[in-house]
Image (cartoon, rainbow, N blue to C red; front, side, top):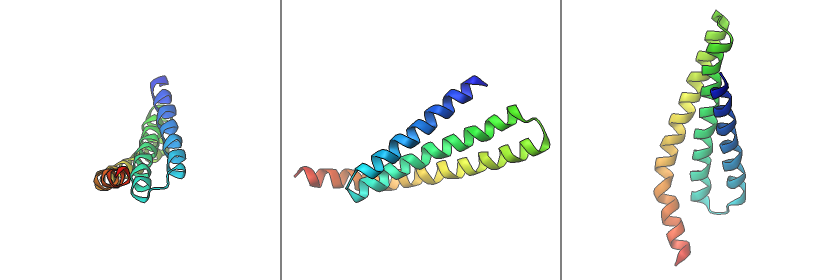
Length: 100
């Protein structure tokens, strides 16, 4: 499925983008907020890889591996979204304090 490959590339590109941004920022709350976004991108990459396994390897082992990757990706996305929602107000507050 070429669509999944394109989505892989986008998800992995966003992961790399956010990790580079993570290392370049000095603000602690913004760092955690960006790390949460990177976690969501990585989870999306892993989940899409698991979905791709369903189409590539149509065997029992392929389905088990795909299910594991899909589950790990979903957990990573869920945890990243929770962190994103938690750290967003802190990052906004931190940015407002630095503007003053």
